[in-house]
Image (cartoon, rainbow, N blue to C red; front, side, top):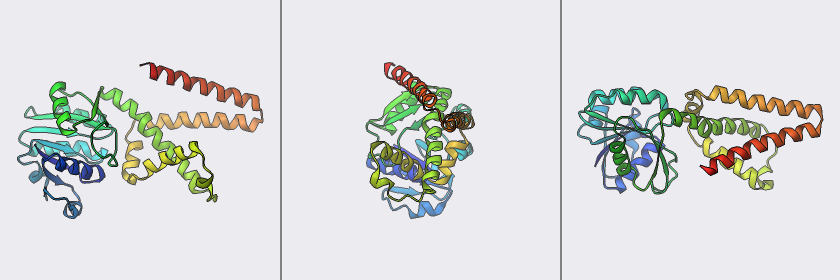
Length: 272
């Protein structure tokens, strides 16, 4: 298969490695040509223009930042003769319309790999697939591009609503907690930490290792982020007020109510 990877960041680079191992013919392109020139992988074609990258290609993978994806897809559609355009961005509302409106000679595929470039391969990893035109055809090419992955079918609306919690909530909490920890003078915290605190640190490190642009995009371009912030602040203020009242029983009831709500949600999730 002839594949072009557009966007040579951490995930684009990882995809390139996977496709080389699958014996695909691989082209790479990035607006930052220095990234392309520095690529040390063998068996790839380094392209200096988008037009060169999409020429004589079966599949184009769009691996650019969220806010650049719609414009990139449009530019590709103007230069590509035929084949598949695969979007892998983590939010879908802005790109979905672009994919729907592609000319008939081009076939859209809308995926969200639910893993990062630290994975060893596609095997066993989860990938959200959002049908655009012909679901079975889109699933077929997706399975060839990501062999061994588990594909989860959902609508664009379902996907982006889920990402409000899976991505935005995680990043909002990581930003807040890392800020508090960064301002702390206590250096022995990791030495003293138990299981819960280590899990918390692992979550923070998983998100803080992303580029600032990627981290910001996940919060900024998700329409549910602002409401999520409001809900978090509301609950924190409620807990703060109860703490300041100095009434242990009231605070304990508050904790029990939230715990019961969470356990009910957890039970419903596991029963599906």
